[in-house]
Length: 270
Length: 343
Image (tube, rainbow over the protein chains, first blue to last red):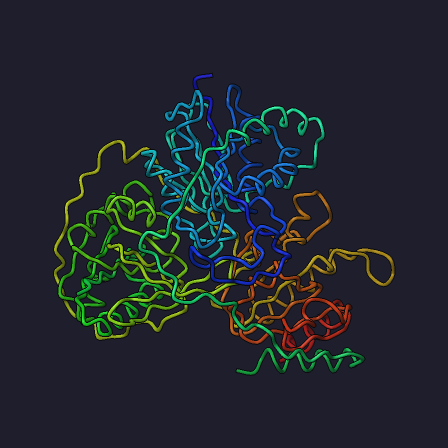
């Protein structure tokens, strides 16, 4: 039991990647057109962190898992209906912006405060999980900043695996350049792990897990703390959707030999 | 006046990477545009040859933290080194390359020096005497330019967006900054790296061509059967003949996690798109992949794009590829392999 972990997963809520995103100017800076109407999902890399965290908690007796998420409460509630069926978790909800244009520093301060409010949290056993980048701001620094706020100096980013050792330490695989992994051994928690994809697939929906989670999810959403993020010296000069439309030449009914010749010519020309 | 600091780590051989030289190029240009000052800060096990290689960059100061404690990419010691260098420099703008090592610590650095950080920067210009930074939001789907009043401001430049600084190597003696390393900073030990065997190394960042395989390679073909071993052979042959880098769609790499028959050499590291990589190659060829938006956001920095798909209405046809060949990828790629092998 002494080697147990307290895993806290920080995860934002992002627009479903199949949606078209259009930036607009709002009173507090840029925003997405019809942002509140866009279907949302749990941030994909953070979702991997959640599944890996749940797996770790299952492996190491006495461990527990929390999900800390900041988003508009209605949006959070919509996303949790799906997430709750995946893995057993305790939600810590923060009612605040989930926009990609929100500043990472203030978001991190709010998230760190939320982690500190978790009843029974023991920072010496803390493994702070999250995605190594979000699909909204993609800054890759929010989790680092939360870790710093909590005084955690052992941090890992682009994590694909964590392997607990019998002495309480754990081995971590982090993605580095050239499709390689850096192998590190950390003496034990506390540590920050920003996950890439890990190795686990998305768990199937489990109605029993969903029902068990719902008992605590709805009260957690009701008592969601308010999180505010101001612009604080950050000014957006311009926000646009890049011009990406190409004039596609669709080639039908061309003999295979000819397609191959055309491709080889294209591949080999400088 | 802005005090610009170029911050970099040395590589294992003591040199600077191309990405670092690109960041230096951006720092030199920004210094000229803002009429500011430039300093260089290096950290790593050995920094002398790195410092000598850029001694002519016009920096007023060269600072360094070096020693065996800083040989490997460990967050605790790297963050301590970067903090000491930034404090010693008095910089207001810090420019660094977005290497995995730098990316791991810049958030912590910003917090420690009470500054701010922006990553995935693709351009830094000057407007009205202030730096303006361009970066992507929502995974390459929205581009924005921004300014900040807070200092120090740390900027992590994506590789490939600036010209690398070029100059004649000389000789320079950097000011060495002492960084005490306590046991609390040694809780993590880096044991090394895991590299796929040479014949399985399918990701080649410097390749001229990106070849992306989609889930269609593992699906039933015209005869009602799957042909996964044949698909593996065709793709590996093509990679061998063309020297291309291999990418995969999420649906294909996810198959391996679901215990379905899939391509053995394809892993999540190959994944391109919303939750995968955003590689930079002059050309990209996709086969058996539908070209849906979450995947093609990973193609943002691919120059010329061609695709092979049996569906003429797939995502590639809707303005995402330059050419879409409506054809059987098994047949086309087999012929392509034959032609390439004969060259």
